[in-house]
Picture 1 (cartoon, rainbow, N blue to C red):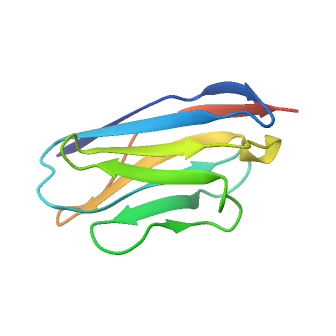
Picture 2: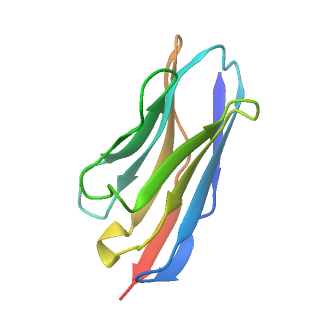
Picture 3: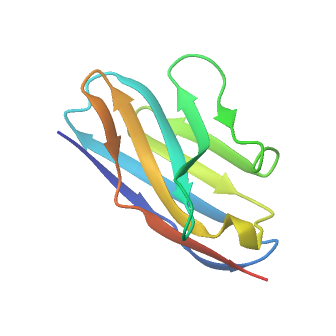
Amino acid sequence: QVQLVESGGGLVQAGGSLRLSCAASGSIFSIDAMGWFRQAPGKQRELVAVTASRGSPNYSDSVKGRFTISRDNAKNTVYLQMNSLKPEDTAVYFCNLKNRGGYYWGQGTQVTVSS
């Protein structure tokens, strides 16, 4: 089993920044990809950014140029640096990990951007 623990969410004013962290532990094996999704009230969960073991990171169009995903393989941790935050970025952000065992999710961390 894989455990994912997110941290770094909170309340910030529009234009501000936050940095999310997600630490993986347990039966990680070889990680294929780690990423971030978000879900706003009344909306479906959507991809924000993902970084695979090979290739460049992918971002949703709505966050390109503002968010940066990075990964520390030694710590099995993925980060999401969020700059120039907008009220529409308000959501619960979930960490996701994919390995040979399947897909795993964190418990989510709330990000609220006030106007």
